[in-house]
Image 1 (cartoon, rainbow, N blue to C red):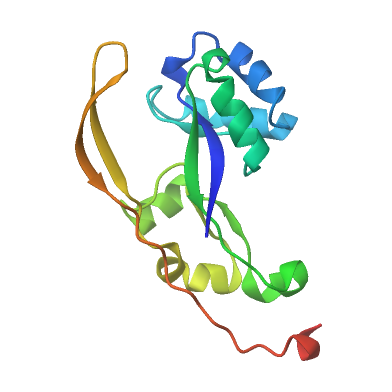
Image 2: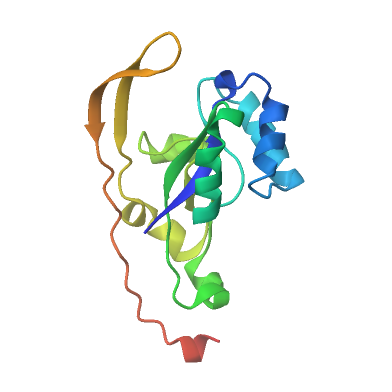
Length: 173
C-alpha cells in the first residue's frame, strides 16, 4: 500500500524556518519532528530531500499542492505503507518501523536511504528485505532554475512481498 509524506530539499528553500512555518499551517509538526529534521539536515547534503512530519492525509496533499508557491523546496513523496489488520495488539511480535541509522544503512545496501523506515524489532526486522521491495528511480535533467528539461531514466518501484502469519491472536492477547 502507498502513502504520501512531505520532504524538504534545503538548498531549494530561501529560508528553511519560514518554509517550515508555512508548512505547519497545513501539516501538524511537533517540536520533535522539527528537531529531527534539523539534525538530519546537518548530516546530509543540501540537495538531498529530508523527511519531516507524519504521513499526509488527502486534504493535506491537496493543500500543499495548491500552496506550492509558498513552500519552496517542499515536495510530496510516495512512501511504502505496511498494513496491520489487528493494529498495535501484535506489536510485541510484529515489531515496529523506524528511521534507518547510518550503521543500518551501511548493512542494508543501496536500496535504502536516509528517509527509509525499516523494521527495528520482531518480524518486521527479520523479514525486512522481503517486505521492503525495491525503490524506483526517476533520473531527470534540470536547467539552472531547477526545472525539468527531460527524463533520463524512469524505473518504477517494486512493492515488497506480502507476509501472511498464522498467529492465534486470541491466544496471544
